[in-house]
Length: 140
Image 1 (spheres, rainbow, N blue to C red):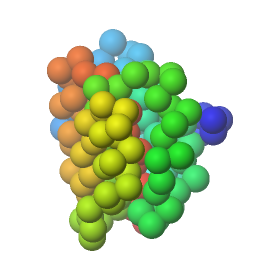
Image 2 (cartoon, rainbow, N blue to C red):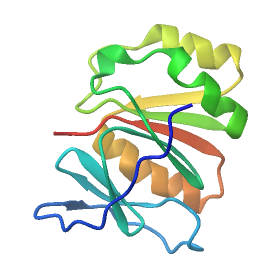
Image 3 (cartoon, rainbow, N blue to C red):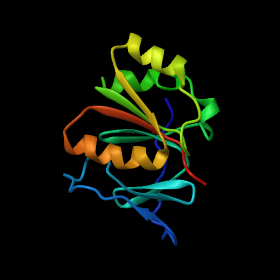
């Protein structure tokens, strides 16, 4: 499993703000995304990430073509998710059928969308108390 990315408190010149909900201080809410990273709670995390409701992990993927089910296997032992949310950068260009088939075999729902849509969806799912794991490919 990848080690957690060390968040920094560096200011961000341009950031797209994502409407979010109040947190208990432990939930990992996405506050925005820009410049190759994500604003998670009060820290900016550079690069692609894998989120659990209460954890952030680095993600070695910088392009949707690098996605595979092996990337997710260690994370399914941390949290047994109701669903997996995958943000592929821009709009999805194909169906990612091998990934969909893998999660179907695991009886886990999967939704593949643009990273911007996945960021908004993440906060809604957390507000509903859903167990979700998300892989978000950073937008340069």
